[in-house]
Amino acid sequence: VQLQASGGGLVQAGGSLRLSCAASEQTFSNYIMAWFRQAPGKEREFVASVNRSGGGTYYADSVKGRFTVSRDNAKNTVYLQMNSLKPEDTAVYYCAARPYSLGTFLFRITDDNNFSSWGQGTEVTVSS
Image (cartoon, rainbow, N blue to C red; front, side, top):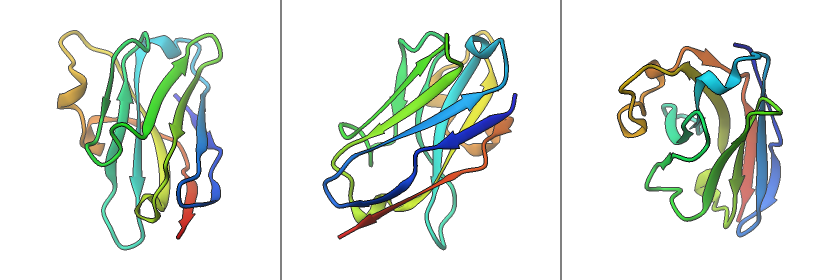
């Protein structure tokens, strides 16, 4: 599946942004989707994931309560609504996908090697 992320930009601390990731795959609903981010000089880290239906989500502790991941299977798109942004949220954000398999639990797939398809990344800068 090919992924195209968008929606990044420059925002002040306390502000909001919504990232989008459009997928080319017509069987988009068969994929678990996730967002990762990579700050300058740091390793890529897990941010959030959503199951096939959108009814199940999982978040990194650092964004819980501020970020919301969702998906629209009719539009083959996954979103990341980011509120109360902090300077430490500054990073390149990547969307990722993996085909669903029976017995997959969101909390067990938080490493980037758990996902097989990646978007090109969209940059988010939060100024203080």
